[in-house]
Image (tube, rainbow, N blue to C red; front, side):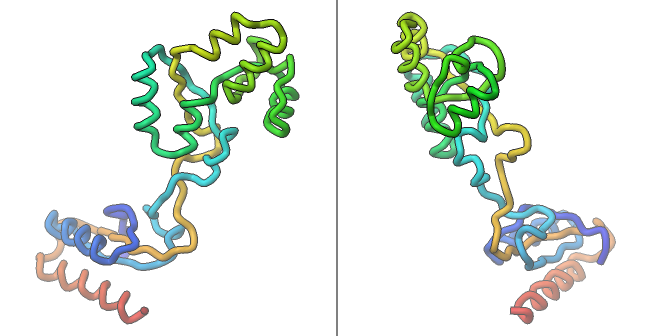
Length: 201
């Protein structure tokens, strides 16, 4: 059969795939189930991209003013531990590429990471506050330490939020043309695809 398209996201459970396939049949679509390496599926099962456990694979896209309660709610709604950490303890600064590289490699804040202009990056709020206090910038330090602005983050360019789960096989429902078969024929075709999967196992 040609020109088949994914009906739903791949799953590790045959029963879930069967329920999805029956749903497609109820709409009159030719429907089969295929079982293969997840990364080869048209619509694979996904997980949060492991690369996003690294804070430096994130960027701040904006910030909005809110109360401490608003910030707590935002943190509670975050999907991952890294996102909770970013919302709780990180902020955006501007500096030179060399200063950014130094911070990302060593954790050291230098004067060229505290310029107020240049290339945007994110740092731990405690690190920039400590630097400002040590260099006589008490007013700026107080602002960063107690600011009620709530940052929002997204992955940097080239890093996707979701990635296919690797090293597993999954079941996927593929559908073809609508209205060209009777419901009995559609169920028979689906049953045949399931039998082929079970035989392969």
